[in-house]
Length: 331
Image 1 (cartoon, rainbow, N blue to C red):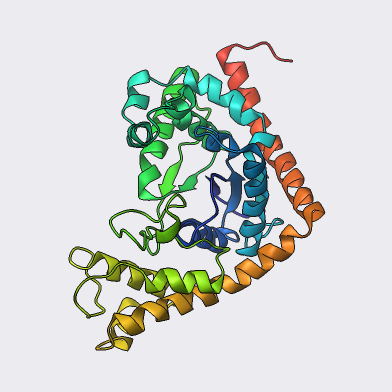
Image 2: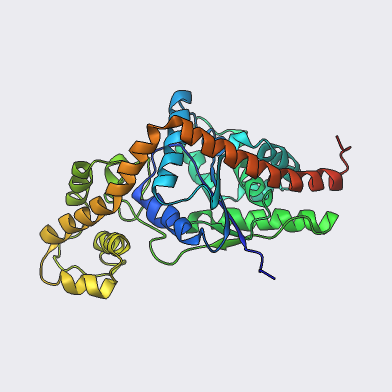
């Protein structure tokens, strides 16, 4: 008998263009997982509105993100790809789970603290309860694994706590998910400030998947390094160069030792443009294919509609079970 594949769920907000960090830290790994696992990849537009969005831009970016997912190598036949707001069970389960989540737990979330400081004039209930919706996203599909960066690990731990609490009251209902943190390329830092993660909110320190070759080359030439000239991996003393080495290795498949040896004695004037060239070649086919797909709106619509139908079938199964256990009358 064939062993049941483990299920993976992950999502990225369409709150800005996808970055090299998103690709190397998440999407590239998703592509490697699609044959081995049962995968659901979601464009989490409901999460995006915790910060004010321009409606037309949000719609546009949601479609662009789907096109870029496919252009990066995610196969719509092997993965369920859908837009979060098309599956209402996410919001429905989120309300139930919110009734099993403690106020103190949400107050301790580091992302809430960070975002509250950045958006002090717009601290909404949605920003506060964001991790409950994230727990609903994961638990709806009985996901075994959640590919996340280190900064989201705390949210997966809260998701497990909520699931355990619910299971403890009503018997086993939810699978307890594990965070899945890839080893290499999981944390690409800003080109302008190597102490911060590459973020779509920092245009000059960030490379976008759809950047032109000229824009990519310019950003790498300006990347922050240090006053030495040695191309050496040392995150403590040389964070900028170490970040560039990580990017180069992820883009070319070469090891750190091979790369350090290749650029020994050559200095940053040679190294920085070489990293830029490696990234340009990595992104070229993705940019070209995403542009082609965006010209075929009917195809993209067929992908997200089919994805939402498949996702909703799985989601409804879990939601029905939850509603029955909490005592709601069946429809």
